Structure formats: structure tokens, C-alpha cells
Image 1 (cartoon, helix red, strand yellow):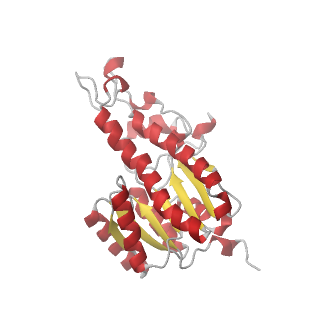
Image 2: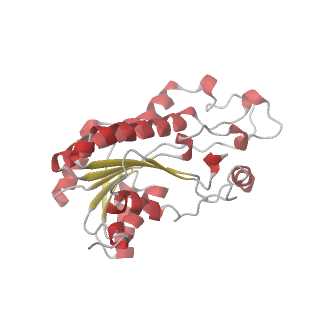
Image 3: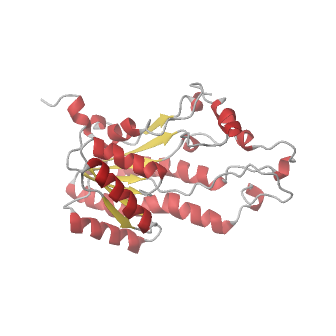
Amino acid sequence: MTSALDRFRIDGKVAVITGGAGFLGVKHAEAILDAGGIPILADINERAALQRASDLSDKYNREVLGIYADITTSESVQDLSDRCADHFDNVDILINNAANDPKVKQEKTDSVPWSRFEVFPDEIWNKDLSVGLTGAFLCSQVFGREMANRKQGVILNIASDLGIIGPDQRIYRNNGISDDLQPVKPVTYSVAKHGLIGLTKYLATYWADKGVRVNALCPGGVYNGQPEAFVQKLTNLIPLGRMADIDEYKPAIIFLISDASSYMTGASLIIDGGRTCW
């Protein structure tokens, strides 16, 4: 009989992580390695993907792949799938992690910031949604189709607490600047993350009879040396009074991609220190 702890193991299972060379992508890969899986870091920055994969391979003495992929095009996603197939029989897990998340600049200006909704450039809208939403759609289409054919697999979409609520623009405000010149969190981040939750629910019901589970993780912000004033404003909105630690989402990743969550699909797991409760 399998124990409860054994159900968190993913020994030998292959997991593709989009945006795998990024800050959270590497942490997802570490979680996969901790649980016995094999991560593939897919990223448009090939050099970074190869370097991060090499670093992880050395650290864990295990196989880790770094592969170039432009997830905004179906041709590149199919090429990614083909290259994965060259190394492994199947991809068991897909983590749609890639996203554009431009930092909100905390500086005074006499011109209207590009991020404000009234002047938000359509080319940035298209680019951000191509990465954060279209990319997840294309990867789910290619890898999910293969999972459905095998009647097993897991897709995890990395959404955000801002996929549940709208951004509180007050935390980005600068003193001495008029309201119409204040920097704001761009609209595309919220739209993409809300869209991922919709994609999660759609695919969970679409492939329910094919053995493919699809869930979303909605994490809050991770502390990574942000300005103290910003951190204070944000933590004032969080009941636990702090941002997440750098490794704090790893157990949730393992739970969501392993058999520990075998009766869970179409769900959004919110881990945000309680922020969305207020």
C-alpha cells in the first residue's frame, strides 16, 4: 500500500518548465529534483537555460536539460516537444510558468508612464499576452494532446494572487506626483493571470476523461531584495505580514504535480499569506 508521503514522489517523471531559466522556473526545477523527477528548462534565453540546467545538474548530480523555445509560436513549441522526445519517451508534467512581468519603476517623472491604462501600448499588450497566455495555450495544446493520447499527465499553470484580485495600485505610488502620472502595475499581468485560471478550468473539464489533470497555483509575491518602502506597503496588505520566502512554494509545486493531488483538477491553489482574504 502506498503511504501518504510516497504519493508526493515523482521518480523518473519528466517535467517541462516554460520560462525555466527564470527566478521561479529554477525553483520549480529544484522542487522536481527533490521529488525524484527530471526537469527540462525551456526558455527563449538559450544560454541561460543551458547554464541553469548545468548548475542544477552539478548540484543534484542528476540529469537536467536546458532547451531553447519560443513558446509564442506553434512551430517552436512543436520543436520543443520533438526535442524532448529525442531524450525521453514521454513528458509527464507541463508547468506553464513563463510570463512577462515588467517592474514598476518608483521614480518621479513629468510624462505619463507607459504602464498607465490610458496610454498602454498595444504592442506590449500583444507581446505580454503572447508569452503569458498564448504560450500556455500552445504548450498545453501540444503536450496536453500527447498526455491525453496516453491517458495520463499533469498540467500546472502558474497564475498569481493577481489572477484572483486586481492589483492595489497604491503600493506603487510616489509622493509628490499627480494621480495621472503615478506608475501602475500593467494591465497585461492581471489579464494574463486571470486568463490562465480560465484556461485551467477549461482544460480540466475538457480532458477529465483522458486522465489529464490541470490545476493552477496562485502565489503571492516573493521577497527578492525589493525596495524596503515597497515591501512595507505590500506586507501591510498581507495578514501574515511578510512576502513569501524564495523556497516557500516548492512543497506546493510537488503536491500539485504528484499523485498527492490525484483527486484535484480545475482548482486554483492560492498561497499568498492571506492577502486575498482582505
